[in-house]
Image (cartoon, rainbow over all chains, first blue to last red):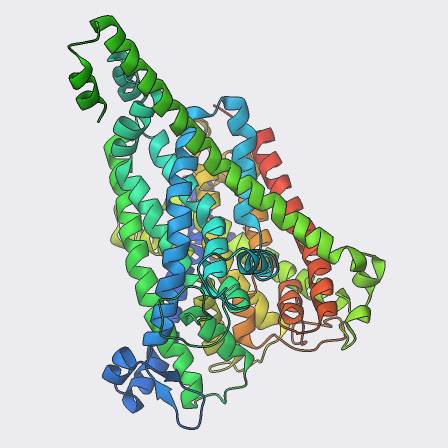
Length: 315
Length: 304
């Protein structure tokens, strides 16, 4: 306030003094608020620069063809190999397992909350699902390793039981972790479906099952797909569960009973070892990181577009 | 399927039973679907209960005051989480003074001052949504490249870890605060403007106070997320044997989820028990914060 008064130009007309000083102060405040918002641009630029610069250096010494088609990943060994396919296959297998759990269960849970649950039930079931989303991922990892894995190993029906570290238990637990995300975004989309559509279907004699599956789900489809895409993107980006329960060996296989390493788990594990800054081992973190970032970014953009679409239709 | 079955039976059965048959099938299918949707929620609840029970049963022998007051040790039965708790408190402190005010400021700008048609504001809008979905480990890479090593080369200290977590939760704070501000009807601001208040006066004295419960809910959830996050800290190099509490921003540290990860990855059973006990402590903190956030939201949720 004091600053504004001293700096006001003397030529200003007297009657404008009060308003002028307030607007000046206001401009400073709005400018500060804008800087807060613009920090998100700085952050994004920072992430891009942090990933791109070392990756470019990495791809100068390792050809992208070797990186994306190589079937062996051993960047920190003496006879180093830089094929990212084993990490990609690990990521895909675990993401698929998580998707098999979280997509159907998440959608059904959303239908339950939006179409079946009474107001009372909904008011305590929804917070409990939200709590599931708030549990730290190390805790899920511990649960996978000490509860789900022994359960699978003792009750295995298909020949050799899973290894102590295996993709299946990590994927299953990850599916449960993502369930609330899928459920909550799908439910938002269903909530946006106008009540008149439900009433119309009911008037034509549709049962609740028919209203849910043939009216509400198709009408909210873009939002539901957005939820699915975001859920899968979260599975690709999840680190701790995989690091704890899926083991640390890059493994080009699609057998979920075996140990494997994902891209995220490699990055996390590389942070544990002491790579000299600037070494090729250090740069692999960024090369894998940018692969991961691009994959999740594409999915997030698709998801955001889809959500915007249903908002436009019904809001 | 049901139609073909009823068609073949049609000649021998009277029309009235045909419809009741259809009704029976419908009811069965409806019941099965109701079971499936309810079951999906029950699966979630069962896992939640199993997860809590498993940690309680496994960690019970170590769940005592010694755990809270001891420092990490190479003997599992003596290992504790005092330095981890203080490390986590420092992280929370940094998030509280950086991510929360900046996030709320950004939300105020986006909701009340931004020209939504301007290209840069639309860019910010998309960018914030994208940032919220960036994997947490990528924020670790950001911290690694600029803070911990690379540009500033500060090492894995309290400040680098706290700032990295602040970056991570910033979009969460912005999105939650925006929703809270948007929920306040524009008539409130219009009223203030009509009485001669400037836009900032109207926003800061009318809109903001009305949206405090929503902003608080979002902030608590963001802090709770920062408390539980381990992946970016691992990448910064925070997995260290720390037997002292942090003394300042430049001090080495350990945090609860890092300590838990450390103990889980040890082969000795004793460390797994310590990990389970520390998990109970971590769960108590994060679940309590979640419960407070949800309670706040329900208690102060206003329909205008």
